[in-house]
Every structure is written in C-alpha cells, then in structure tokens.
Amino acid sequence: MKKVGLIMGSDSDLPVVQKAADKLKELGVPYEAHIYSAHRTPVQARTFAENAEDNGFGALICFAGKAAHLAGAVAAASMLPVIGVPVKSSTLDGLDALLSTVQMPSGIPVATVAIDGAANAAILAAQIIAVGEPELSRRLKDDRAKAAQTVLEKDAALGL
Image 1 (cartoon, rainbow, N blue to C red):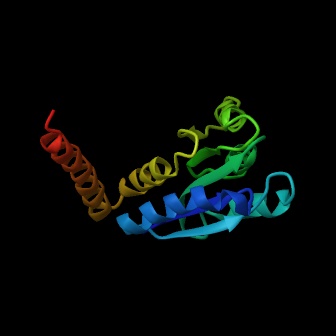
Image 2 (spheres, helix red, strand yellow; image 1 turned 180 degrees about the vertical axis):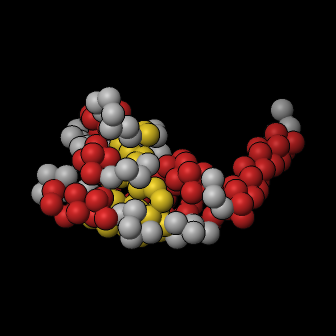
C-alpha cells in the first residue's frame, strides 16, 4: 500500500498533524511525518516532494499556518495529489492560511480542507489511495458507517 506523507511547516503544527496521524493509524494507512518549511528549508521540502512518488507515497498532506505556502510549494514539485490543511494561528484565526492554501494558480492544484481539518485530510488521502486498494476501501466504508451509527445512537438518546 502507498504511504501518506504528513509535512508540517513547523513543530507548532504537531497537535493538528497528530489528528491526521491518528486517523491514518485507525484506517491502517502507513504514513511518514516530516518538518519542512517552504521558506526556511525550501531545498529540503522540494527534494522530498520531487522524490515522494519514487519513495512509495501516494498522497501528501501539508500543514501550515500564516503565509501557508507549503502545500503550493510541494504541489509545484510533485505530481502526487496534495492536500493542504490550513492551521489556525493567533494572528487571523487561520483565515490567512486558508486563503494562502486555497488560492493556487491554474495547473498546480491543492485540495484544501477546513482550518485544522486534519481528520478530513487523512480520510481524503486514504480515499485517494483506496482507488487501488479494495481492503482500504472497505475500511473507509466501515468507518463511515460507524460514524453514522454514532449519530443515530445520539439521536435515540436525545430524549427531548
């Protein structure tokens, strides 16, 4: 099975990244996490992105706050699907990161999830990989059914 790359711009993003790692573990999807900055370590970020497909990755998730150029920089250097997770910062509550991540030029797509939307990014990456992995597809379906069951149990217990 292909791996998912979790790339954060700073270790301050780790609490958000952990949510994606937890979801990938739950789904049985292998992953690697790295800290590469689009601004402070651009050579390393680019090198990782350029070699990701050859190194067994099937999708990349980039986490960045503020200027949030990481997902775009990685997408420019890789043909793999890139998912951007804008990380909430104290400056503009993540709106700056959201706008930086979602406003990509034509030809360099980045799928963007909600601010701090790490779990959805992990699910989307797993869905991408599941195209060629029937067992992973089944686990994703089971996960969705479990989520639906949780809502129905809460509805039954509401008692209003």
